[in-house]
Length: 251
Image (cartoon, rainbow, N blue to C red; front, side):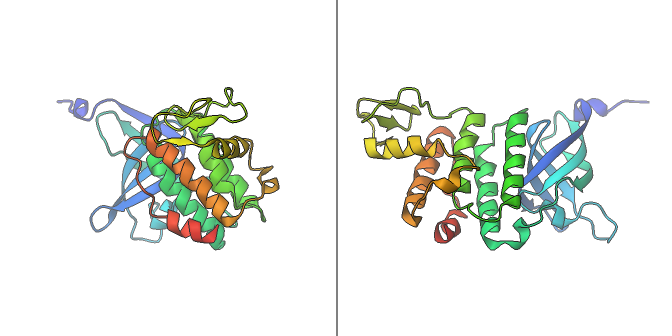
């Protein structure tokens, strides 16, 4: 008997935690699903949606930032993998029913879709995203700065966390280099000393203490704009995010 398995490359059985980032309709009953997985980083799947009540591949399972346990056969030469089994790993109790939290999650999902495109085998990143979502789901209030803290901390996992060691009173911040400098950069991508001091303060925020950092609506939006500009300078092809406008209105 002839063996044609080599045409699909090496096949490995993968069991992993995964977070849904984006779905794209693919024909009448299929969709492409981009996920951030614990075992392999970013992976794209083609899924045949179930039409029967008992089917596993239900569209509801692929809502943005749903946390799943999945099993799939990894084919090394295939760009789109196929799921064998899927189940919800951590059901949310408040996010789907809170319009403010939901708007944050839609923004975070779109943000991660582009910020993590080149990430592979990055278990700490998946763990951070999952624990952050668990924090947001359990929060009763004081989460208006969540997206700022989240975006800043993701830079730690994708390789361009700002260098805080060179800060001095009156320093500028070079957005291209990701570091403070005593000289005004010769290019336009920098923060003034006043803005740089605000960034340094922002870097001290985490989910537990961010309630202590009071910001106006305009200040929060300025911080969001600066952080997204920083990502555009460091992630090739990072676009303007469509979900940003709603976030700006709410927070």
